[in-house]
Length: 81
Image (cartoon, rainbow, N blue to C red; front, side):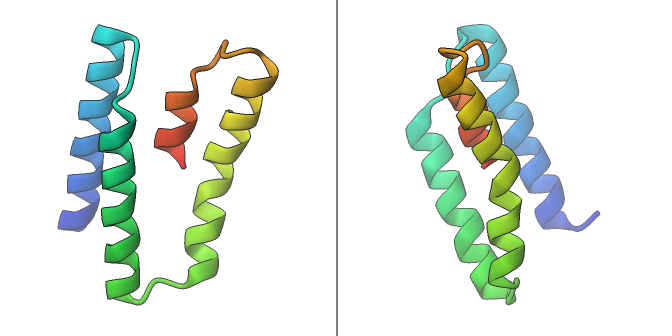
């Protein structure tokens, strides 16, 4: 794995740990991280379609969250996006 992938894994592990302890996810931190990932993607020349399809699993979880009245949390869907 590349350094960037290890960094993403560490941040996601941090979000998971925080979620398990508090049953919430800091949306501002997730948004900031997402912005950083997008900037990195543009900087490295990642194809736009690759980035868009990467959001699909999170969007599905967000949809399930809305349908089930948050049986699965919205924060989980946001992190997956």
